[in-house]
Length: 353
Image (cartoon, rainbow, N blue to C red):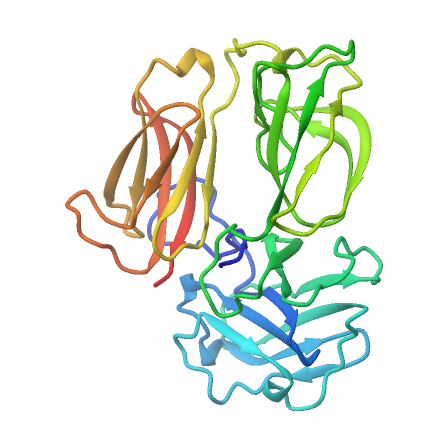
């Protein structure tokens, strides 16, 4: 079983301008944290592949801090190519106490004076620490990142392994009603994932496991949100929860099949990073559904290596091979979604092997 973390990477290709909006984020971050069977803490630090992993010349030191202590990580045996670094008490120059009942764990990066990289410190909160969305870390579970500032519970610790969304979410299902009490039978609404809504008004969706106070639901391609009758959730992964959703306002776009002409294309790429294959979930507005769409994949040199046809509401898979069937190497790849040669969405992903 693998875990989730949504890609946090430094995408700076100064010589090539493939896309308009490069991602510019920390070169290292806390990607997973847990306690072993002896209640000793273990954490995983992920380094950005775009700068080649851990580079000795870029870091003067790396420290880990809790609310009580700060300790320096021993880096003498870390190789330049290291992408995932596992840290425990033995990895530090001095003891570091982390409270299992609740704490804020920080990763402090101190770059060398010769480094040209931007950075910011990273942290995760859990238990009874103020602002935490994780009430506890059950035995056999870990905390893993699913967004830059957000974490969720992961069933079974997989520190040191490639990542996916498996074991990080629970299933929420029930009926969904508009403010007049009638079932909503189609449309696009989401919490973490879009709801799968059937013609009798039942729905199901996946939600990352954490504490949730839900009082609104996002609308069509996240352009808008709608108030709902509030409810609270706090469950572990691989759990099924039944709850009816009642909207408190009108929501025309969720009750019609036709969408406005300016509606956007939505594309979700997961897992990212990936080690064998990655998925693309695509939603296309109805006025574009009859046109041919493609996901185009490019390497860091801007060369197109793969073209994948796509239809609305479908999930397509890229298994890490180019148009000639050759397996591509580890690294950063770019994708963009086109219809009739017009670019609607683009992004980046990381292939780990």
